[in-house]
Length: 293
Image (cartoon, rainbow, N blue to C red; front, side, top):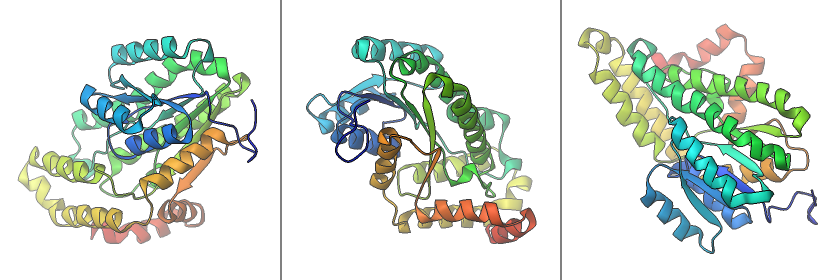
């Protein structure tokens, strides 16, 4: 694969599929990749979102595809479109970004909500990955799995989301080892707090989850949980890390001659990783205790 004068792989002529591109980090990533020189297939669930993305990207650098990662038929249909459009070029990379965040005390997470969390962030990602592999083998390409700092430390009131991120981290490790013989590199990108629409969705979904449960259970958690939601949103608003920082990191993972296995975006994501490595479990529990008190 030819190198540019900067010592990294050129994006020119390379096709990338980004899931969850309708909003938030996925949208920013898809547009940034298109500006960088990749041709982007942007996975969206609504045609109107795809039309807006294509218009903003301009010059045919982005092609929207209807893609719901929780619907296998939708995934199959989207990858048929990608295969036809890429032809002999194949697919250079898959960015598994689509995901949701279920926030509630685990005692308040219903089986239905837990299944939805895992189906979207874990099962759906594997479904898309499996569908992309024939095209990625053709290019000896890349997979970038987007997790978060919660892929290494499980924070109270985000247990369902952390469980999905831990699972996605494990899946990434296994894929990296299994796909190495085919020349396919797998990297994880772990963004910290970044202000995107997900925080409003998280708070809305969290309060809806509590509304489904008996008051005697909800009352046990209501005060610290609402304090946690407020703190979480404020942390995101005050974060110096931007969606562009995240997108630039994805580009590094896609263009590095020898990509790293993990990229952490933002000081908070790096701090969490260090705390996990250096603190015993009980000490980490004490560090996180203010969240629940």
